[in-house]
Amino acid sequence: MDLWSIIVAIILGIVEGLTEFAPVSSTGHMILVDDIWLNSKELFSEEVANTFKVVIQLGSILAVVIVLWHRFFDLLPLKQNLQKNQEGRLGLMKVLVGLAPAIILGFTFEDYIDEHLFSMNTVLIGLVAGAILMIVADKLGPKVPKIESVDQISYKQAFLIGLFQCIALWPGFSRSGSTISGGVILGMSHRAASDFTFIMAVPIMLGASTISLLKNWDAFTPDAFPFLAVGFVSAFIFAYISVRFFLKLIHRIKLTPFAIYRIVLAGIVYIVFF
Image (tube, rainbow, N blue to C red; front, side, top):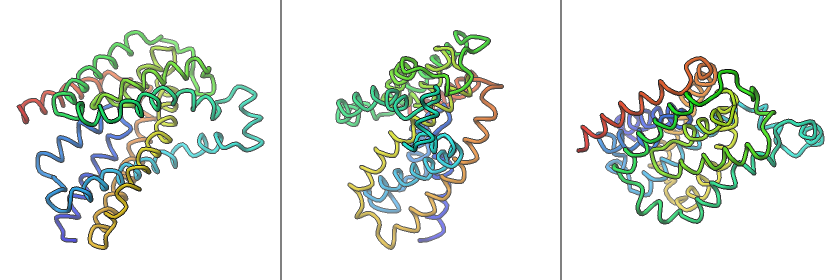
């Protein structure tokens, strides 16, 4: 692997790591970076390029698991955790209730989404519409949140947040942007909504990534492996930094600054590609 391949892997890993869990749409950023000057398909085959995107996403997932390890540990079906869940803490069943709507709709419309919604036009719509939802959430959200911790989430609220997550099936909308907005509208603090969003994101992303990885397992050739490994490490490091920083910052600045950034990004994408 030459120096340019290493640079490409690092930069794409940085973009993925910084944007995957922030409410700014990693899809929009990856399309912008990939199509302007970092098209990895020119370095390796299309199969390797697609696998690379899955691998760097796995790096981001690992970072979130490490940052919120105690929350994920509490979800394991251990005796002490079952006791905690009976006392009203966030349990695995609430997470599954929140995941159900997106999983059902995602599997039902997967082919349609892949064939018709992954375009520059739809991503632009998603960026702007998602920004509007985030601004509305900040306006409608209570000044004094009723729910300050994920442990206070009810099954009904988990399901309703799951419905908001379905909006993110539209590319560019952002999973975290839509679900955090939904949580805030339902009375959660920005931090609690963010925690629940990240917890829900891991299993659904891990499942989709694992399936994609198994389909493209042949891409792990000796020539491509260093490229994939560098991207994974880069995405992990910057996702870890991004998630920790975001969770400390979100209760102070809320969602509107991210919404403004999305609108600016949409303007840049429009100018560059249209």
